Image (cartoon, rainbow, N blue to C red; front, side, top):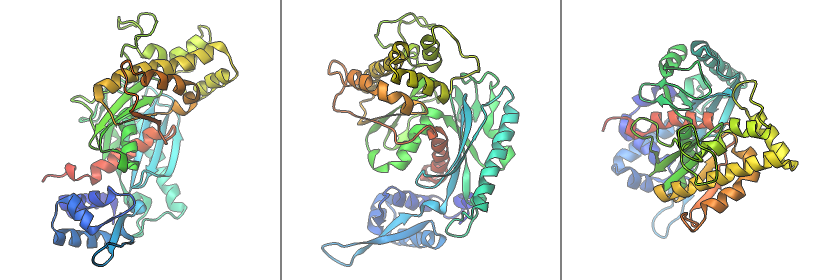
Length: 405
């Protein structure tokens, strides 16, 4: 089975069956697949046989029942298909190749984007080719013998907003001054010869969570993304809600109610005034500004190291980040009524030891919050943007919703 021909192999019904099998990571019986898919037993049996022959699905033991013969369990083969993800971030460009369980097969980090987007796109295309070639040289093969390049479904790109996902246009992301109205999917598609899709980094990160933790997505899930700034994304019924113009989740100017100065937008104590990393670094350095562009994980790690050492300014900044984010979460929880809140992003692991206690205290306040809501940190690290971008492409390629009924 070659990834590039997925849309040709049985269209909607085949994708419906594959999605039904994939929805249970421990494996499900054919009867369960029939129930989930709504298709006839004959259709599911025929499609399942084809998927087994192609090596996309495998048997995973049997399940005994009180009546009748044991049921054979079906499970997706993770290495049957791959997708590539690219995270376009001010501090660097990350490339990840992931399998059907959102596990990273290979990854690469490129220098930060420049003011020449077309040259950056060429670097991304060359970097992707290099990663695929390296995998092939290392002997990676799909169950049907396909090479990494043959098995790749396509490329997803995650970028800071603002952007137009439908047109594949990067409009005016912060910290990327040369990237204005860049037709990224068109350029990268032409450079690689592969399907490309674009979405916000917040939506990509939440998609990675949904793809890898399918048993926890029945209700509403709120994701808070902690990077150079903060953003959010919301999913319900396992689908991310991007909004009419892909701008949902822009929470930087959410009022916190904390003591603070007036924001450039005119409001008092906006969330971004406490959580934008550039501002935190400047205040902790007694007025010094960044001299080398956008803040990076190295800057954040240095700030946290000073907080660990007990320096008053850095410690106040990191704790203040958590307090402000907790106040924002109280509002977001009351608006979205989620069953689960996940906090992640490239800088959260660094900040969380000092930021999480204050965040939980504020977010769980009974005054306005919902103390029963589960709030947890993401299992992904600073590569969540690239992993999420890959799962976005995987989801579009394999979702029955992408094909006409």
